[in-house]
Image 1 (spheres, rainbow, N blue to C red):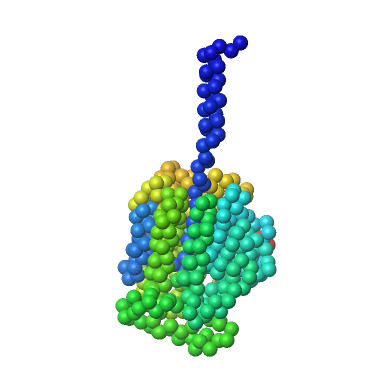
Image 2: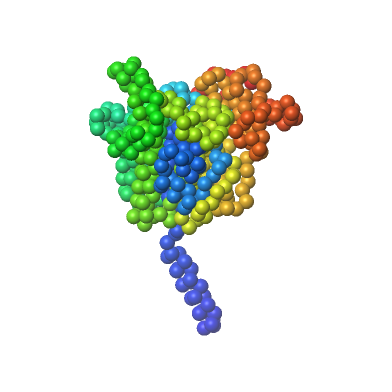
Length: 462
């Protein structure tokens, strides 16, 4: 027979167990990744920009953590986005060049961050430029884990901000090419997604198309900068007359247009952050902001005038720092320290495992990325021994980072150049002859860092 005292203890334990079971589980964090297109390391005020106003992104940096040594996946759009989505660097990725998106794009066996989070109960939406698969193939966003997508599918289509159509999921939808600035439509679709999913965890991928050429902005944004800079008009009569809407159209005020595009994007980042506060989900939402590669000079773009590379060598299509080192700001109120600056070295392929750990979901096996959650929390962080990059569209180029050492092979068959980024971040002095042991070590790693891509058939002789 159970004593009265023992019975009381059993009853208390049972009630405590029932009470614990009744407690609601903590909400999984919302995860947002905002990706600018061709925004340089030095194009934000938080990274030293003086000519273009970016008050909301600068404030985001003050409210969160600013990273100074974050790398894009590649030096052009599609492969960089592939690294972001799949957690694989260019030695292992399916999409290694912009041409790949017009072929197959992502493969059925490629696991994206959206698929990882969707399996864990997240609503998933992508709004903007996809660039990883054309209509009808396995690389479409709605076939790679996204519940919905609105925007552009292919790179060349996204060169026009005033177009007669965009895509909603896998369907072509008409828009008014005389009135509708596509960036605005994309932003509004993203805001609507957030409102509709406010009561459940969501993953919002927002790959804006600005400030990629062509350089276009609505009049109210252009007027903010008109007359602020000496201009070098850009002319392309052939593109102006093109019935296929190919090429970058003429722009008499390209510097004002570029600045207007960046500031308009900054405004919409601020609107999104304000929306999180209005909906009461600000503290439940971690926001990443970055760019897919370094700054461009097409369509009248002038990265030298704006200091877009932030004093680094190179621009888009270079594997020097200016082509692949990009901004990274992360904000999560109450979880990430405000006004923090980190020199942690990491890259786009680290986002997938980072997002998976934030969500409490397993990352897929065989990826190249590692979670950066400890760095976000200001804790000791395991770092990559080796970062690998390659680029195919001007011949075959390679680059790698090993600690403070950076190697660049500018052409197939050429010896590598070697730089010490700790003392020479602008890569001005080639030290390969002074440190043959380090050069040889990196050469060996370059030979073993890549595997044949099932999409990119062109093979490089290293």
